[in-house]
Amino acid sequence: MNDLRILLSGLGSEWYPHEFVHLIVPKFERHRMIEEGFATWLGGAGENTFKESAKILATQLAKNDTVTFEEVLNLKWGWQYSAYYTTGAIICQCAYDKFGIDGVKKLLEIPKNNDKLVEAICNLFNLSKSDLDKFWRKETLLYLKEEKKK
Image (cartoon, rainbow, N blue to C red; front, side, top):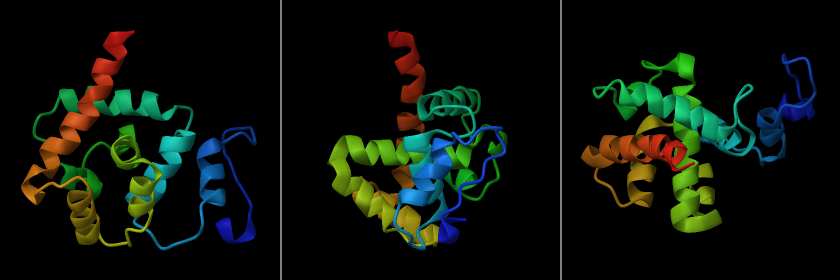
């Protein structure tokens, strides 16, 4: 309920950073994967932090070598693991790591159109469309390695 500046939570507490992020980001009809991914990146999702969600997604992705970015984009795989939100968050983290705030701002300008999303991600990271799955999988699976470093 961004227009009314009201934050609602079904978690039994007013503490819900994910929804708070939605309230503070300037309103724009951006792509939903980026909108939800940005809120997940900064505020987590449900009761998980971004990194916890990324590890869950990476664990599931490691068990399935056929799932594609397009399947996640079209909500055909892994919704139970918040794959859509977490994929958007991983893309935000990658943009920040490689290009800083300017990279994240470019993502936040992507309109609600799946073709434009794919095109913008490929342009930002200098990928061909055929390399997007490999890029997404590699970046996601890094969250398994991060856990092993500890």
